[in-house]
Amino acid sequence: MDYIDLAQTLECGQCFRWDHQPDGSYTGIASGRTLRVSEENLPDIIKDPFWNHYFDFDLNYTNIRAELAKKDPVLARAAEYAPGMRILNQEPWEALCSFILSQNNNIPRIRGLVARLCGEFGETLEQGGHAFPTPETLAELTEADLAPVRCGFRARYLIDAAKKVASGEIDLEQVRRLPLDEARAKLMTIVGVGPKVADCALLYGLHRLDAFPMDVWMKRAMRVLFPGRTPDFFGPYAGIAQQYIFHYSRMNPQLFAEDEAAS
DNA sequence: GACCAGGTATTGC
DNA sequence: GCAATACATGGT
Image (cartoon, rainbow, N blue to C red; front, top):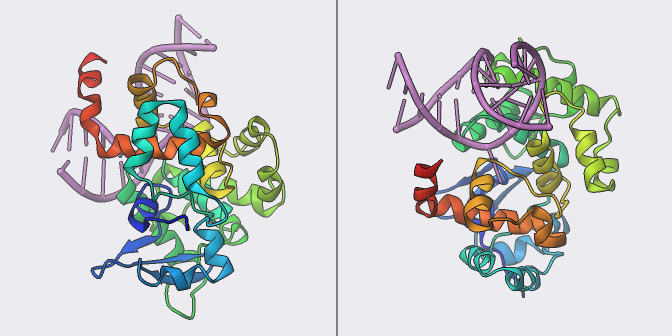
């Protein structure tokens, strides 16, 4: 059976609500469900249809890696660096908000912002912890209400996103089915959502595997590792290729030492 | 204290 | 169009 590596999947920068426990397991919350997952209990976990889908067991990554590997030897190396990485099926609204909060920010702090947002405004769960707050809840808030989250200038972006989603002006499930450029354009009507955040919401929230978020790491990786290439070179699974390349680049910054000096 | 962080909006040419 | 700059906050 096609497998998953939890560390590669949960710590590759696509999600912000999973905590690595001392015993090696991960605890997290998705769609209001809490979970403790480890390599040991994973076979049981994925018998549950919700988690099976969440961890993307509908898709055969072995085949996709093989297809991507044929396109370029460097991509093949990046894919083999994290062969157990998968693109989660996160809640679309949560992914959108998470990546709005990600801008001009670092991953540890993004995790803190998301945790405080949930703690302050998310429904308290019976099993402990908090769900991600709904768009309806956030739409009622002011920037001052969001002060405890300490997300700075991103507060008004979050509120604008909440208003557009809660009102139905943006229907994320409808966006999921649009052609890629139309989907991006729709998301970019939200204040504070540019091309990169839109692509992250599409790839990580709406499971649009053709979306290819271009952050500073990816721009550098494309320049150095794939000169002359554009995202469409990677084909319909460009988003998965992006995630292999992103992770590979972050784990191997020495690849770009010369490029840094040059630029 | 400067500099940076999975960017974006705004401004000026 | 495209380059420069501000933007809140916290860590190094």
